[in-house]
Length: 169
Length: 186
Image (cartoon, rainbow over all chains, first blue to last red; front, side):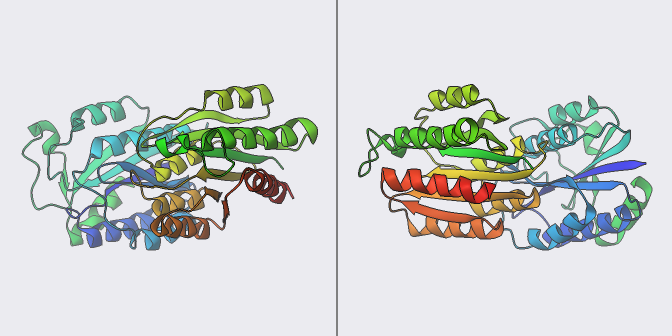
């Protein structure tokens, strides 16, 4: 079955960049077991920046090395805008055949964004077949979010990435 | 093979000024030059091209998805106006690449600007997205621009395997645009 994956990655001084890069490599490893997988990337700081439209895994693999050298973006991070950008990418490039669609959001959630995260998550729920997973590279979940959403956020640690991806992909 | 070309036009405040014989202002001269090559490609030579248009100042937005309809191109050109302060060329590149997402054939963005980049997504980062989407950037700069802008322009065209030109007169602007589209369409 076709699978479309978009990574929505905070690229600011609040991010644990090494952890994000490790996550990207792990996604590549798991996704490459499916010949029909496509991966896209949206980076974000204050603004969302699409870096790679949904496409072949080779392109994703090449882009991991490029991401490493991109300077950090401005604060405060706006994850909601990046999530909306990623939804647009998934919808614009949707193929007629049925597919699983996954969005991984990795953010620090260090400050309350201007656009409420709840609104962006509602938008993702309105899209057919799309499942959105939230991860943070911080040590604790944000206090400014409602408990319902906050408890869904997975605190990302080095040794646990494979465990989650194996379950999801 | 269809050649999809998006003209990304700087509509920031500085384009309101004249420069050498680019009168009454730079934006008007750009409008005339794009019209000149659009007529050549779509009407006189009937080349297999589709033309689109986007604009940027402190923000960026699309005006025209790639089309072969000269009337629509003319309409978009007539909509060009000075939009305000700031210059965010990276945002312009992102918007341009996005309107080429669903398009088949070769893809080019021709940016025409007088520099003064000071806002939005860095041009060199936006160029990575263009490269990943197989879009080549061609950048035409008008007049003397800051070294930092020139550096970003060179990085962006290098990333996308594109090319940059600098023009100082109306004749240069017309001839360079003509050369660019001739090079693109072979």
